Length: 348
Image 1 (cartoon, rainbow, N blue to C red):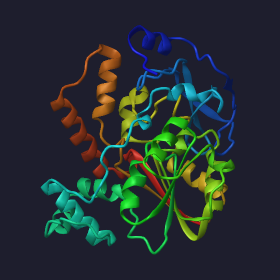
Image 2 (cartoon, helix red, strand yellow; image 1 turned 180 degrees about the vertical axis):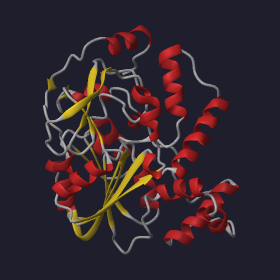
Image 3 (cartoon, one colour; image 1 turned 45 degrees about the vertical axis):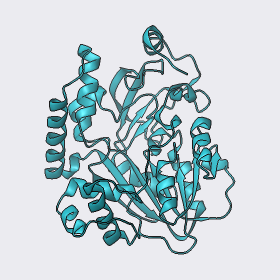
Image 4 (cartoon, one colour; image 1 turned 90 degrees about the horizontal axis):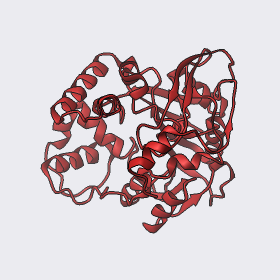
């Protein structure tokens, strides 16, 4: 569905037409005490979802959550136009055409054991000296080394399957899952099995050595229940990996309602480090690590541009965008507690 022009403004300015539900308590730790952070939040990212939303900060685990919020049955309206509905871009690591990509391949081969072609000698040393580039390359494989024989990977909320395509090339047996029928269809069109529907009720053929959730838990109505279902699907010794925006980040502090990480009403919960640890514990995990990283929200140019367009109707310049990125990355390198992304690894 293409929504443009006046239709977009009407959709954004109008009320939510579907069902909503009122929580009255934190969806992570059930604490009722809270502070109202923002009201009248609107969809200023994709500009397809009507409604105005209230964002609360939990006094128990310090997460942020929308209340009232769309129900699981009505939330699909907010995904009418979404990036996961398009075919994945070329995600292959097997045909590097540029010097940086050949350097990348040498680093990934040395760091994770993957057999990658066209590697540039000393790439592992050069990339090792560039922290931002090194993190970006490691994220391509989400920190997982070359798989053993018949190692199985499930990507929960697999979107358009870009990650699954890459990992299949690298020797993993991959499966996708998504509640969005359009996204699931895109993955299946690439020849990858993708289960459509909630993880909690899905039927999978056996267990998995690795389960990943890349910027998925913030979209979930009941993240603890979903994480518990993931734990049940892990083979003994299996690992769960997830990344999600950080509710106490530099981006949130600087840009507030214009921070890309808010993205109402699609992002129902924004986690603090404490909240994510609580969710993993309540889901039944006994061993986990939660780290702060400069991730997809670590660059501030998108939020600066969003604020300028929302308040002045004009975009920031390319120079300003690069300056915002450099400033944000520098601050987050010096002050890790302000980094924009939480990354957790847990074991079954």
